[in-house]
Length: 115
Image (cartoon, rainbow, N blue to C red; front, top):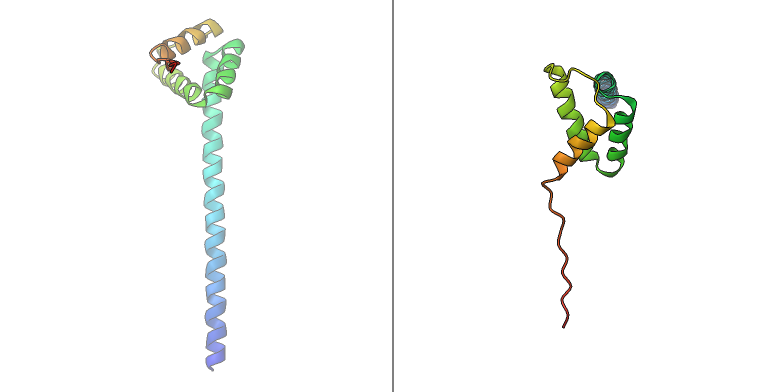
């Protein structure tokens, strides 16, 4: 009897473990679907407010400064959702926005001291 009970306990544990793994996998898939839907929504908004050259400029910035590109995208999406952008933004507009966001940054000053 003890062996049968032990086998049943092990089977239950394995079944519970497999169920937990299946639930975790399902949750990961759901989260990935949500992230993909959010990315698609963001891209749709950006396509509506940025002309192709502006999108290309923003993608080029993303290669070098992903944080800056995300910041600009978030601001543009927020402005668009509030109805404050009423035309397509050009590459020049993106350049102006980027320069305003980065003008306050000071470049490190390197001094060379001689002995």
